[in-house]
Length: 227
Image 1 (cartoon, one colour):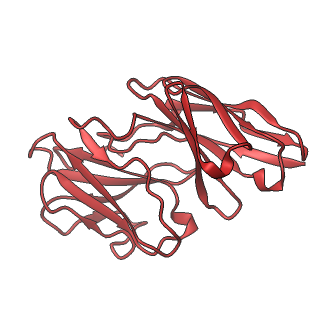
Image 2: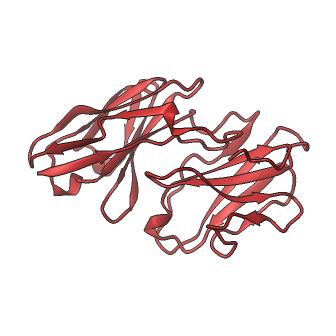
Image 3: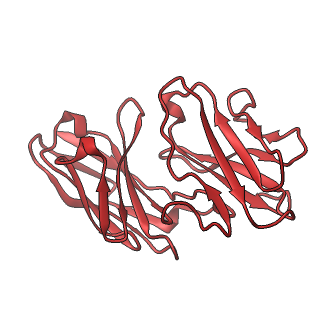
């Protein structure tokens, strides 16, 4: 028998503040199947987030590698090439999606989870951030963030959420360093830049499997995170 675990998190690239994972719901907590059986639309994800019309599906294997399986943009599914025939999903990205895993094998035993997002990147009138970034192990990954909310929004915060964990703040930045890092994070591993009021970046150095997660920025007029 193989066990498929599932959980969910909220995909929040460029949101103006943190939100709780209760905005996205996923059931059941786990499924047990025999080899050769299928998980037939039994993994269910739903959300009620206004203006969010994309549901993304991910898999994390026993080695903690995070893999995108595909996404549902309103009623239109897009699958990664290497999972076609094994993975499928239906639904409406504005509300819900059901995931199917066909002909289960040992390689399918993993954590599966969903994420909700707006189409492509956040509206250009707010905060912009690349929605998905893939890099090889031991390479560096740089995430750029920009906004058009005006020079009053001079503070930029960077957050990370690993699968199954709560959201954590990495660093608080302004155009005038030094930047303020939280105790679990270092500048050597997560160097941040903030050259002007409307642009900033975060780099994750020497990528490892455990660095896979959701990273996002938020902007503010003040230094209170409310985290």
